Length: 136
Image (cartoon, helix red, strand yellow):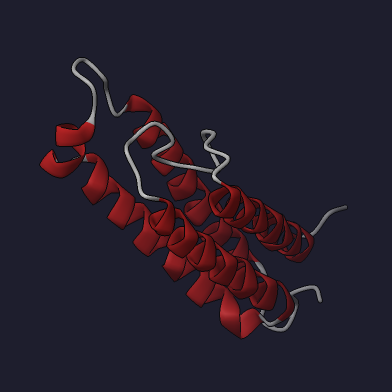
């Protein structure tokens, strides 16, 4: 049977792959949903380079969390902060001002919700794993 520790390790390592993919996509300008939250908004190339570095640090954080239980709460907290920040952006007048007339933020909210679900799932898995049982 698959344990909570196995699932947590798998989820954190999957996040490493996701954030590396996001980092590369932002570096090369491959604007697709899931790898780019705001895939269809105006941007400057330097902004994508900055996001690329940030996504790279998320990958490093999740890599460390998959190997050291004490890091897991920090990875979860970083995703929670990301969910809050994206929610504030999604609800902002600044975002509305750059969207084409009639364009909704539904796709952005969906992606933000998925990050929120990921955050909650990691928190539940972490809570279910006995201390000292995170797989390396």
